[in-house]
Length: 525
Image (cartoon, rainbow, N blue to C red; front, side, top):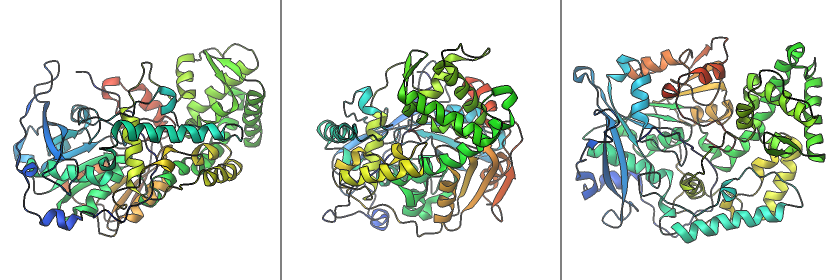
């Protein structure tokens, strides 16, 4: 068994059904212990190729928690126990993001990277959320092309975009229709509480990244008395789920792009893109217009202006974006790439870091199931998506039309439950980089604001998606470590200044075995 590279995603949701009775957290906690809460994990060594301390087990959980004696599904869990029982505080559940991301291997990764005093405080618990990986995985039978929702708006192609969205919804309904309504964040939070119960823990500690922050927030509202030390890193704003979280990629790409033009202008002698931010911007948009008029070849890909714009996440990392634009400009003009260029790495930035081997659609299927089943905020009419895409392409030219174009949730079945209100106090720690492409700063601030009682650690100048343990030099690591070892939140929000060396460069130079696998490609959380 090899360590996986996770590919978590994010998306949107449909309308709420009022005719289906809902299971409240109070009802769930007041009910007598059902069979799934009395089971005992049968721990075994996950693989002879991996350390004996890394153990796995499979639980049975209700597909529908309103019917705890009905259909059951598998929930794959893993653990590495604390090696110092005298210092052990409890169990810490780990989630890498998503929805659609596997977390079964996270105890292995985290045990290598956590400081000793933090590591000894917890049994590290990984799990594949319901529908993912080894936990009764679902599929929609989607092709690679159908999995891609990075679709720019053009009047002549909007009809095919509508067809794509409807096809994805129809195929998911056909392949997994009996399960899809129950692959939701609220049910995954209930699964988390099942894990807590079967482990014999009174409370649960938690470290969640990206989508995992929303999952942790939902747990804190459904089970506040069982919420212990929670770190929510790279925050999803609960008020933006889920269409708004895609649209925020467009709004926040604009200040990142402006920052990039300043960075490139200051280095005009090295890169030659322009000696003022305005000149750099004109160079970029001139390249986009040229590629739209006459697409060009770049490392075996046909590049047009939409493809260049779709790399919007790269502009949160000026040291990566600038060589990419320089190389694309050279290719468009028929010149060789600059000396020292890494064509393979540049192609990965442009194509969103797509894996070399064909991907299963399991992650995508769970992505849509959660996004479309969590909330009723998605428009049901294609015309609204078209109007929004036209408007947002003008307002946010880098990515606005991609973000607001139609998605499969327009044709999804109505959700079983409403979204979780964030009304209860949550003594949790939120963590955020200032320049995060996937859960931008405004989103992390929204999560902090929604969770009354929380504290926020902001790494000013920090680049990249994922903060704690992603960058060994991040100024955010110390306050997170202090919270995890003592359980005491900072007295007030903390803003610290990240070291001047670029976070992205430190991440890329890290040894692969010590690199956390949160994605940074467009269209992923």
